Length: 260
Length: 328
Ligand SMILES: Nc1ncnc2c1ncn2[C@@H]1O[C@H](COP(=O)(O)OP(=O)(O)OP(=O)(O)O)[C@@H](O)[C@H]1O
Ligand SMILES: [Mg+2]
Image 1 (cartoon, each protein chain N blue to C red):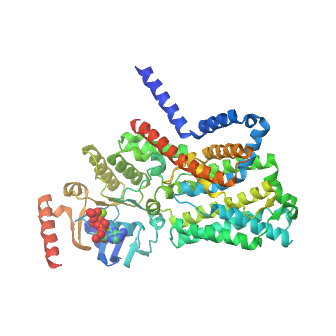
Image 2: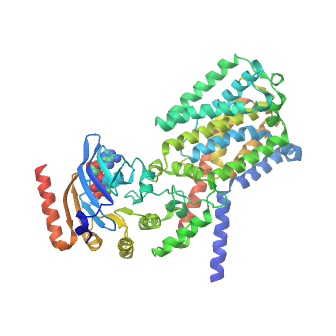
């Protein structure tokens, strides 16, 4: 879909030759990636392939060692999470960044707590709980009726729901979801996939990471496969069936394993 | 059926409220028990005295509470109390370039400086808070003795206005409660305050959500130092002198009071308003011991046990509270 515009349009996010080392581990070995407005990228790959590392670099949670990042064609340095947020990048990390001892409302707004419009330095708890309620309800999450509940009493899936709700609330130009369907029930998975589709309608781009190819296939415009820190496949979904893709992934991954 | 559910819920909420604020009934209980042994405690003037007596330590407890909420501890609290009071005292005694009406800023300023020193090593150089504050605990303690030249500074060498905050009962008590209220607003109703809870919960999560643990740790220890300095000011006024031993017996009670008030040692939890309860609780015990002229050594032993009991009490309370909340 968007793929056809590639030559004429400027990508929203363009990564060039991204490298990342963790000590001796070469986690990313020169990644190139283009993402266009409203495009959904399904990012897949084995455990340890480098998916989360790549998203954390885009999110400003860790720094790349070399390479360039362009936002709307302009070269940018993303030094921290707030830089990324300013550009319009919203991330739901794989680690489910929640504080157990704080309540649901505060957790959704972590680092971006709403301020009272009269006394500018005080928090507006009413607004916070109202918004939390609204967004949780919209996603059909049971937790909506008690936004003052401490997060540590929630189940794994309920916590994951909070993380998705946060991404939904702060969505702006690019939403990155790192394994958002993990732990979720059938209904929960449906909720996440519908959310991703709704992003597309709003022309918001999305990187969706999952180990379930069927989920990725359902919503993605393009499938990107990482293996051992390299991008070894980047294809528009429309050219393949799920089965064909599955075979390609297995074949490519095996070849890569042999060559290393 | 419906009515029963409502009743049950009300009962549970009451129980939760009691548990979260358990330090208050505990304080009243201990007050009553000690009062039965030593009836003088019940007299209104003595009660006022108990509050007044708790205030200097109360400021140091605020310092420790902020650290514990931020998931760290400050072993240098007592040493900063003594050092900041001593250096301010020496400056006011030996040099007269500080106008008396701003003299009370001195200990606060030096306390803040000490705290920033801790905060720099812990926050920006990422050194272990336990080791850093253990080191500065000894360093500030030694410095206090060196600059004192081995002597107590009598109150007669200090400006009266400097002694006023800690020596005037009404001012001392009122200013403490106002401070508590301001700290409560800061911790619960400002972004920076809430971020202290966040960092106390998890530094990694804070980092990934755009809250810089380095800056927050620096802030936490700076605040801790500042309130320790304030404590030094109030101790000076309370004693009407700067004894060479000032601050020596502060560290342990700060832990005891914070923990018994429900501040979690795991970080990220605690209500500063309840810390008033813990402060008064220690005040009653202290006053009781004073009336019996118990030796300082025996008091230290007592504080050791109080800390242990406080930890046990806290654990028990948290377990009960969790088991109720889980069911809701
Ligand atoms: N903070 C870190 N310190 C050291 N090594 C790391 C760190 N984070 C990631 N790595 C390493 O980098 C490589 C890529 O990890 P990454 O988390 O990006 O994989 P992933 O594709 O997200 O895997 P998964 O599907 O299991 O989430 C792995 O070899 C991992 O061990
Ligand atoms: Mg990952």
